[in-house]
Image (cartoon, rainbow, N blue to C red; front, side, top):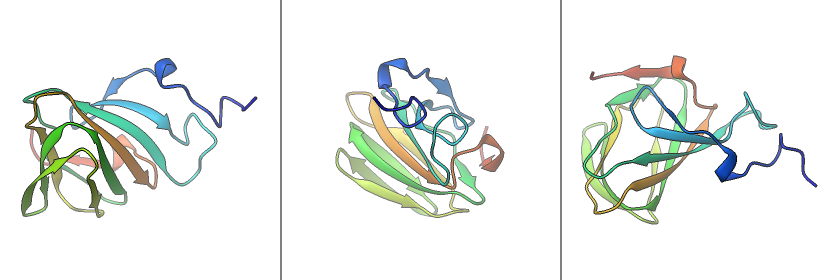
Length: 125
């Protein structure tokens, strides 16, 4: 049987709201699990809602759209993303995502180094 530090169950993970106002579940994070250089979380954006425009000074993020459709703002670009798409967000790049679909937008977010509130700068209120 795997240690809880190396294995998580989605149903047992509490959700919380990040600085950008998305609902997050940390699937793996160095503060709670045996991972050192990255984090993996699921973000859920309700129908018609969007995250606040923000950037990370040090963190590179990958967004994998696992369910739904969104309008991604990435620097000066705005484009549609849908289930199966992956977006690379380089450090320092302003970004946000709006749910423009008919269901909740689910995003797997991989961050390296791991996500931290301290590395998140809000660019809108």
